[in-house]
Length: 326
Image (tube, rainbow, N blue to C red; front, side, top):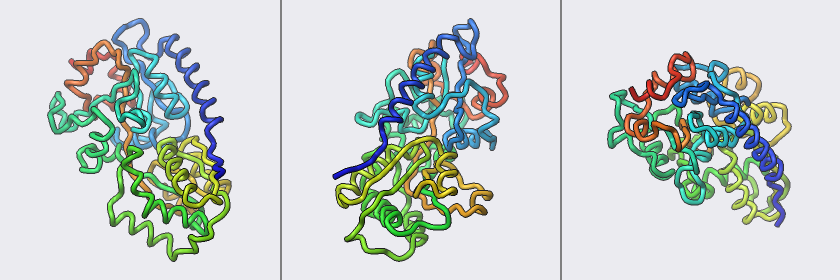
């Protein structure tokens, strides 16, 4: 079986991003010479993670987020890994290891003080493993946003082979969602997607190539689905590349790909341009910091409240880690 799943270019890009992050960390972003100064990172590419995180910060937009702009989820992770004072945000697939479910090496998820009482209570303490966090998302304990649905998008409507692939994703393909570290949608949401797809085609004679691009958040899940679907239908091939939700939406609306992966809400302007989408799974954006942060234990105990995040990323009035825990 041949599967054209594009890894090479993505891997090379991640390597370059890692080098860039090391250089930025060496320069000392954000905190000057203060060993407790916050080094702040955001995304340079138009993406669902940044838009969703900004929305959680009292309804702001991605372009209002301050910080050193880094490309892609892997880039943010590497930047924070190489900066002891760093803070950024990642989709959970990059904040946790795929194989073990533990937090990514040199990163720690910053616990959100949801009730803003200055400490992480037992009911707010669900970050140890990816499974703990996805369970909290499924149960509505982790706030939404930054929890959100993830979508497959095209222009006007899915047809033929692509529609049959998405129909499989919403049915048999859901068995792989938990395994990949994502959250299964409600039965009602899945049925809504199936209703939008319409009548079934002939799944016994599927052949062709499906081109997919877009959100880093949905990339690992889509690769898993493509592999399993390809095992069932060896004459179906996939070209899959990550590049951000904005790119996925643009290429879908310009008919450059069959599926755009989008990890944010669909804008009215995009709907007016013909955007047609089906929600396929759910995950969340999480704030991440370096595991060698000088105040790590204090931050894990106290957590960080929403207004504090606003003062870090939007107002830039919170610039010292000691003031986060003080």
